[in-house]
Length: 419
Picture 1: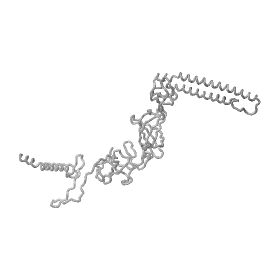
Picture 2: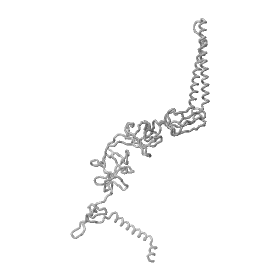
Picture 3: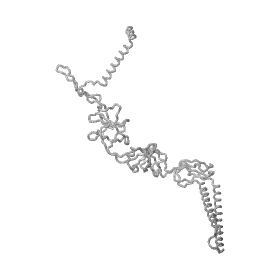
Picture 4: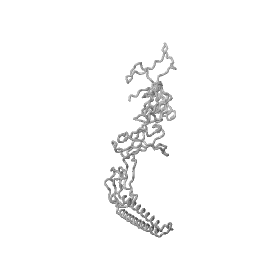
């Protein structure tokens, strides 16, 4: 033992090389036994699953029992187990899935047009209330605007009185001119008071305009809803002092909602030339609700930043739906286009991340082709069937769940998908 230890210390490199060689041989033997070696078994010998095991053909021997070389005789291979489906190209309606948020077609921030104290806030001005058009919401103190209207009325009355006086004086001036017996027309328009009459008329017009402005200012003290909608925000309280331009409330219309959508060039091609003729279905995936309603409006523009086509989905009377479609709801929008010929319907798992679809030919060998997904539906992907390499009869055998071990030409053991 001491002698062996001394040899190890004297020749450490030789000892490590010897250990490495023995380990490598042992691992190679295990790999060969478990993955390459096929133990001979008699014909019909059942396996653990009950099926007869494969019986390797016996090597030919001479009469004296000497084996004959078998070079050139093909050795059967097991093949990769593959689950397949069989499918043929068919016509399917084009389908595009988009996402968008339901927004009111009209949304307004109500602002004060006058200065004053908030005297009263009516019960209609509550967040979530539905109000009709012209429903009063806020009343602002109007004393100064009442006074302004009274002053405007006084100025208008004075201007009208001045006009009456000028009309009387102009009439008397004409009588005096005619009584003078002078021929022709007066040398100055002032003789018949024409400029004074024009000035009096203009004073009446100006006073009328001031009176109308004062009346409008007074009406602004009573703030009302500009259209039928939902109060989404209230920004004042009783006793607040507001100035012109201050925000009072936010109201969102409920007659129509609009969903803004964006389509790329492939989706536009799928839906066809007239996008507005596509069918629409709205899906609220959070609530599990589907609405079979909506009308499309083509935006006729392309976003310069994203290069996507703008499209809008209009929903009329959204609160009449069951359940109501509320502002701010995030929706998946399904658009249905015309029938597309020559499409393959495959499970989504059949399309790899690299965009490949693997097929099994008649010799049970693998091949692949590049595919671009056109659209998805209910766990399936729809692609264009390849024009080259289509099998006889047009039926494809598609690998349902390809893996990284797939290589072109590899032998397989195909099994039909039973799901």
